[in-house]
Amino acid sequence: MMDRATSLEHFLRQPVGHWVEGPSYIAWSASPQLVGVSSFGQRTQQDSIDVVKIFGTLAHPQFTPPVRVVLDYRRLQSIAPESFAMMAAFMRDSNPMLMTRLDALIMLVVPSQTGAVVAGMLNMLGYTLPTRIYGTESEALPWLGASGLAAVEAVEELVAQRDGRRDLLNQIRRLLREEPRGASLQRVARKLAVSGRTAQRALTEAGSTFTREVQAARAALAAQRLEESADKIHAIAAEVGCSSTSHLGVLFRRFYLMSPAEYRAARRPKESPE
Image (tube, rainbow, N blue to C red; front, top):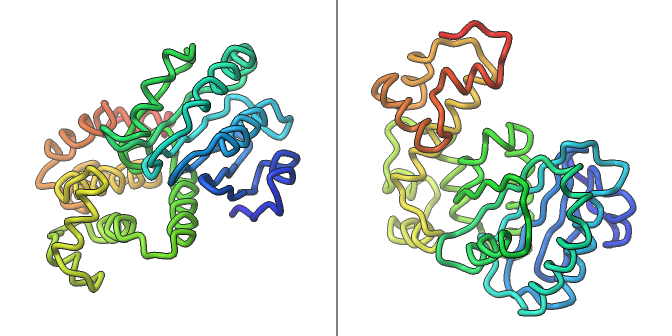
């Protein structure tokens, strides 16, 4: 659970357990090892100055290395050109600190949009730590963990509330995670009281497809079950709607680049492999 900071200065003083909203961003920290910035709309030069200050809090004593940073650019429409120069200067001046305190940078982007351009600029700016780029938070589960995924989804809800509209894409994703078996676009649309065309438009605007979302939901739910239970892999495969253990294995390698057994071994090292 995160509380709203009364101001950016409040967040900079006490980042862990708080979130703060700016004109084009929500910055948050769910734990001493997880901090993020969700960007949306048009990023101005002043907003970029704020975000650089937020990155500076990675040196704050409340954070315990190794720290993982989540940057969600899926809603970002544009960014001021001056922002790249500011980020380059920050990377140059702060790279020693980042190298000692950060474990990985997790980026959520929509291919071919502004966020993807920002992601591609990191190497040019001299960022050398591991970077993981995903299209959905569910795909990032191995790096986020269950609590990190919940934090990202909570921030998504804050962004949706700020926009003043229902976040249909997130509703589709939540429903698929709750009921991954036998899912169809029309059935999901009916449950959400929208037309199939409206649901399809939400997926298309996010650069996704219904098939991809179903697969991601099944893989994410299976990953959670592998982490939290001792159930056999074939039972988990059936529970999430996969036709076989092999089917689940294909999804896991697609989204997580490892088998279900490897995922369980990495998350639960004391468990005997299946």
